[in-house]
Length: 146
Image (tube, rainbow, N blue to C red):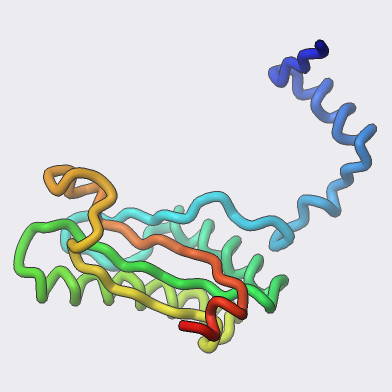
């Protein structure tokens, strides 16, 4: 059995080159960004600067893959009334959708859901983890069925 230790950057680079990988394989927009959840502060719906950088990657990916759409799920914590929480989760989802559209993603490829506090990620007491937006990629066949 052969074991490859992945803590040697030079060894990893040489193995990737030998396998045929080039920098073209990793150009912006060709690989789906790994970050799919964006968290918010209490009673906030504005995007943070680190969120903007990741959302630009998502926009680039979507522009390069026209057969893929995105569903934006807005969430809130359980503090306050459920009507307000649903409103706040809608503001969060709308902020992400507006940003993606400004970056060139067609509105017809963006779907939104606002859950309020109905679908917590963590326990209801862990409010910070539940204040979030999640992105879900859809193929066009799935998107049309919605």
